Image (cartoon, rainbow, N blue to C red; front, side, top):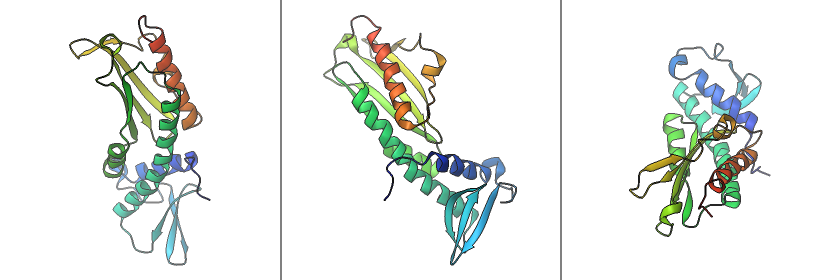
Length: 203
């Protein structure tokens, strides 16, 4: 049975494997990068330290190996994104006329093509929102480990960003970390709910 929960140990190892042969590390040998291979029948089992991170055919290029890492990472990242989205939709207590936008496919494209590690989630007002209650938020949830960065501002009548709603939030609330993506999303929802409720005239 395929698990619906992201494999956090795999994500950590696979991102490390990808980084160890990319960018400034592109000339490192596989041994220097901590990547090993075990032949099983007509394929290679690829490990980063002791964690299996990919399976490759007998003939492959370094670029194909990198893309193989990102392909499997995407599968786990989508599970993480689903957990984050589910909790936010359930737990966020937003003013009427606001919606949560999970930029899943755009984030996955950036992951595949650029090795981007972030899932972008936006909270934005709709036409049904009250002028005095409009706010916007951006959540960058990272896909290498359960951590995130939060930004939230009032929206002024002219449409520009106004007061920082997280001005009084602690650093650990603006940049939360958690053991799982479910717990991370719960922390994010609690921080944003608190910021909204502490502002007079909201709700």
